[in-house]
Length: 172
Length: 123
Image (tube, rainbow over all chains, first blue to last red; front, side, top):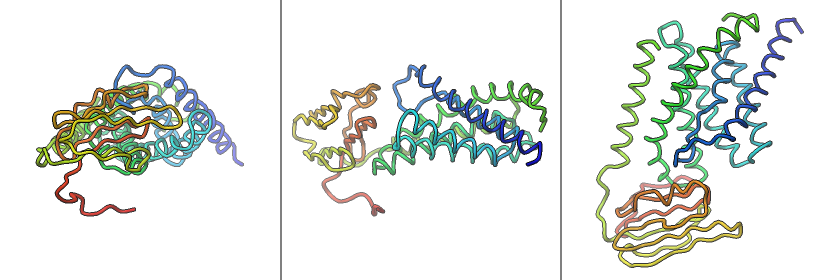
């Protein structure tokens, strides 16, 4: 293995661990909102930073590892479906905006799209699990909350990205 | 934040507004529907919307939901779940409206007694 590959692997492992920790931390401070599924999405910061620092392959790998680990550690199989659906759609949305990063879409756009599609993914999972289309009525609220939390995580990601890039010695 | 970031936010806000209008569009005729209660995906109870009554849904895990049908509308008056979303949901009174308790996997839906409004359901 080349030096660069080992470095990338170790940094990805660290980011996965960070994402799991953030998931746990988020569980300690539930938002005082009476709608389930509204979360700050702190682990999405890791997805974003990984995407902008290492690229889509690592971002997807970190996401899948994180979802598997958190589901087995804290919740269980049913939450695996929700997390995976939300996470995969979220990273895909971020990835599509990331491809447009030279065209004036900043990391905040990616974060907002990620937040919104994370919630859409969770609704879709709920439709499959509950077998009712009635859960779609939560969609408008969850889209708006996805925008709000996306702006927050986007600003955080945008401010840690250059610092982390300097520390890791990779400026993409 | 750049100008295009605001554009992205505006697009999603518009989408949310359109979705909201779609979800809250004038529902079908009221008064002749029936209340269907689902527990763990399965039909648990069906009572006409015009009748007054209380349905208690309980399972082996101690989850409990109490649904009240009164005056042509249905409310969730009690739930053992922590978030209490279903209890705070506004009462359902027209076809297609619903109240959902995701933690306890209980769904209350008002179904038209005239005809099936769905084209089909894929399994």
